[in-house]
Length: 391
Ligand SMILES: NC(=O)c1ccc[n+]([C@@H]2O[C@H](COP(=O)([O-])OP(=O)(O)OC[C@H]3O[C@@H](n4cnc5c(N)ncnc54)[C@H](OP(=O)(O)O)[C@@H]3O)[C@@H](O)[C@H]2O)c1
Image 1 (cartoon, rainbow, N blue to C red):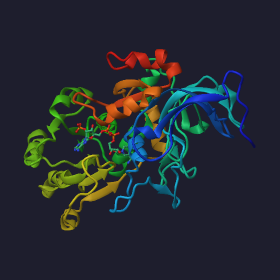
Image 2 (image 1 turned 120 degrees about the horizontal axis):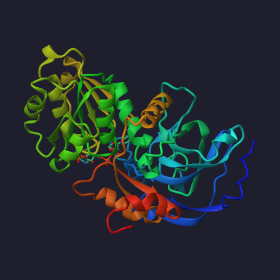
Image 3 (image 1 turned 60 degrees about the vertical axis):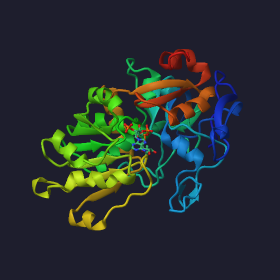
Image 4 (image 1 turned 180 degrees about the vertical axis):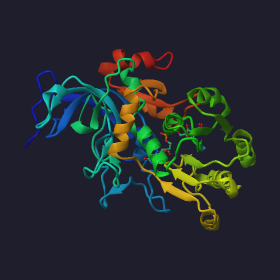
């Protein structure tokens, strides 16, 4: 079965930002003559209205996914070979409307607003995902006017109270990763959980998700972000600028109890301090200390004594993305209003270079996500969330 023809309402070419190689932002080339994709069997064609930016866009562009300590300039491989080939349209967390359906997809889906589960799943299993590649890396993503994606991964979210840009800010790259960090470490109600990188996309998702499951999130961040993080649900905010007395500061906010688990996005030199804060009194613990790690914003290498790990039975979980089941649970929570968007600003698709620079050099008071909106959709979906002075 071939791809379905495009309806008359969809132009044959579209605007897209194509990544043409590894390197700086000049590798991102805006092109208004890219062929519009046609939906294959089981797919829907989505007219994109908003796509969230993620750290992974920059890392993949710069080739910052070394899997060996030599620091190869590369992106990760799936099934033994790299899936990032050029040109590639990046952008994982896609919101838009269904404008065409492929073979086998019910026409009733036309017009639906939805959010993409961004994974390129290797199989139909719902409870495990061992090859976490994604739209915007191993296949074209949402930094474009149109994208073709599997219909069962484009989840209908009607919720009129949520603008498209806000829904994109709750995209799965952050939320599903956050949730999988918690399920991997079996975080349960009542547990004290440290969230590092707390003001970022994954961190703000973790704080909310801890509250959804009844756990108590403690945020590690910077003082200027404390009020916003407390409002989002953090029990307390710890300053990351000086980690020398971290254990004492943890005791001060937990009433002397160790942390039950750490959801870490920072790594580097801080990892050992996080372990201290879980193991200082094993006699009052009722579960093993657990460290979930899904990012390394503070450094790719940590020095940890293995004796500390096995004597104190610290369980360490490496987390990359999550499962179909988890994506569906998150969509249910979004539909039910249990999660809220943390949207910092929207940028036009043609301004992606500026958005990338802003993202890398962001200053104080930055919280949550940046969203990219196709120029043709800007007035309706982007302008209300533009940075002051850039409408
Ligand atoms: N494994 C996966 O599947 C997956 C998926 C998504 C993201 N990630 C990774 O997870 C990490 C967080 O992603 P994100 O999208 O939330 O990123 P983000 O929005 O850029 O947030 C990262 C946060 O980490 C903190 N931070 C940055 N540099 C730091 C440093 N040198 N030392 C300590 N803290 C630092 C900052 O928070 P504060 O100012 O609040 O401290 C920053 O806001 C990234 O490394 C990303 O690549 C992995």
